Picture (cartoon, rainbow, N blue to C red):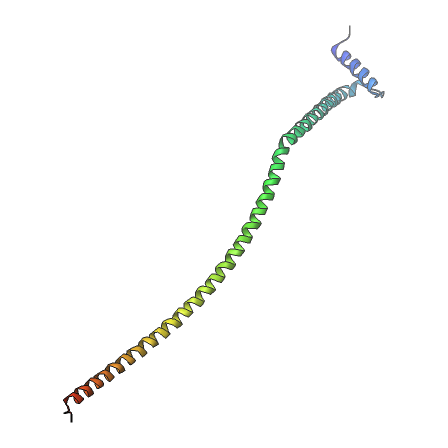
Length: 155
């Protein structure tokens, strides 16, 4: 009857032969080879799991891309509309700024004209008062002359 260590040695030797590793396996190296072989199997299994995970992730990614495609299209359309609206807003601001500038210029012009008209009006009011004074003085002179003439005897 063989011991557990001998069975392990025989199993590893068969497996190594099947994998093409026909080099001599001494008993001193057996423990190291056993651990390396165990690590190789573990690494191979991890690689297989990683490949399966990668395939699964790629399928999920494709599914997400399919689900996200309408949102991507809508986002692109909304971005385009947003850019168009921003451009229109900039044009409207530019138009508004120009219109405000023109209105301010017109307002200044009207303010200057108003000031000029007020000055001219004040001059006319002053001239009118002078003419009224002069007219009043002339009326008083006419009145005095009429009174003087009525007081004179008629021949």
